[in-house]
Length: 248
Length: 305
Image (cartoon, rainbow over all chains, first blue to last red; front, side):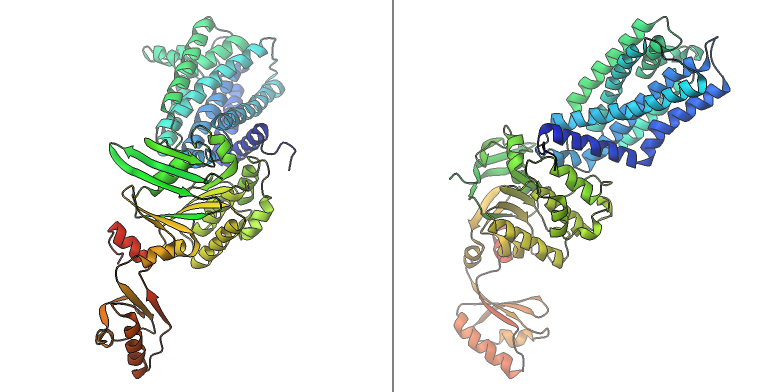
């Protein structure tokens, strides 16, 4: 037994390990968080289908990073949490010395660690296969990723806390598909007809991938607006999650 | 020393209906206390208020001299609990969830020891959802005990267990009592309360209808009964012909309950009549009702058929 047994830090560390262990144990999570973004990146980058004169990787990498955040923070976390509520795991953990804040910290840590693995995988593919080089703005990119994580965590938890587990499963997967198609991830929103384009621009997915592209990719003329949209989604989604979340 | 649990005039309403209504009782330190009652009596609501999951709408509860709501984390370091069902990740392995919970407590029981003590060695590497109902219950019980609690809340701890696993669980609860651990349990099984509880409270529609030692509860009934267990096929007419016999009921084949005003006379008549037809009783018990009878009489529930 480690020296700090029973302390908050020891409890949160153990809970984080279990969160990650169980996430990786579910095959569909590994598929959607690690394999799908990597396959899409390689597929589209190799086909070389890109708008304008930018390199394929400069357009695609920010979109795939956005997709990685969406899959981990919204789909994987949302569905797992919804089923933990359904199976009364959240209730049972409430009957231990692990405080609610400790459980939330463990979930946040597990999301960030999985995202770190995703960023490493996608970044390595971009660097080794397609010769992409991170610039000095990579730090700003991390900030955008964190803001995006806040927004999609909020959406995932708002569903997990308010809906039945089955509804969260269906809703998260449906939103994932919509964000993949309308999120400026594989298809630029500029190719969409109005009013679909305006709708897509207002979604958090497009705001995240466009903000990322503005900082680490091909650049964008509307970075401020996209960041503002993303911030708005983060604030609203987290507020809704806090209001609607039920532990049992 | 203050009692382990004190409940004073507790009330809880859902949608304007009082599911717990003016409940008061105390559980002493080291006591095994059973909450009995039909479904919807308010047992789980009461235990969940004591665990801090729900707030009371009126009245006062203290657990280990703490408030279950405002001192929740402190209380959870000293108390263990078992939900009525579920509460464990379906995909986690037995050993993994014990390891996890061991990190929540300052001086936990070693997971490997609990695996042995709870008879989970064969399934220590199995996922929770693949365990039998009884194994799942034993794992839940292990998680309630891993932090060496002073007090454990057990909400129907033997539901879904086969007779052997129930006996093993009873032994664990008896061992807890011998170590001075306070146990509050709810159960549907009357024999469980008779076997384990120092005192039992019978609740019905949120009210306390009786509280005493199980034996005292059994003696409280109005009619004396003689309980006969013999091989199946004793003619009811043989029993009803006895001079001192009142109403007779065959609870199940081979188990007969005879009401009487004069148990001494009835025993003589009964053994004589049985001997005449060559039947030796397996068991003859004189006394009040079984705890189940008390329970059914006081709560007005239908006897299960």
